Length: 204
Image 1 (tube, rainbow, N blue to C red):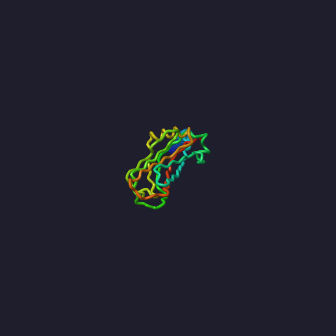
Image 2 (image 1 turned 60 degrees about the horizontal axis):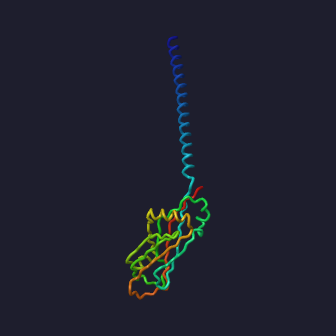
Image 3 (image 1 turned 45 degrees about the horizontal axis):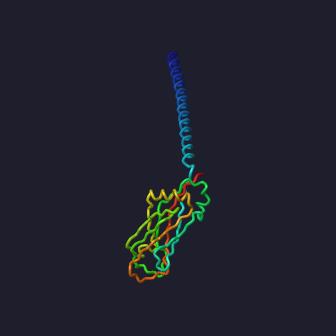
């Protein structure tokens, strides 16, 4: 009887010790996990601060072009300071990049949608250097009437324009249209638009 009592006491003591050890072990594991989490979160915060030291602002620059009296060339000067996204941040600008441009014909006088053009080209000129953006051949006005045609600006051209446009706040858009010989349609005006997708990277 006494032997059974001692045995039971030993089992109780062993179980108590094991329980205590398990609790201590679990506590150590939890502490290690918490420490690891804190280290990970600390690195995440650092990465976030490093990553978000700049912000990119998208600015659609709209150029309105009006051709009168069947002229073949239209020239329009634009000033970036007219855009508050540029004007309010220009002291903190790190980079400016042109991504793409869209062209369409907005208004006609008279409306002659079947008139055919041999070619249409438009260019940007910045700092005395002219860059060809897009070219279209053998089309009718209907193809472009209120229908935007989007042109991706080649990376090499976009980079060169970006380098120049940071130093020169003015740029000029040239639109050149060649009509078919012998056309009898006289346009009082052709109003078209070019919208340039510009991304400005600004320091915070």
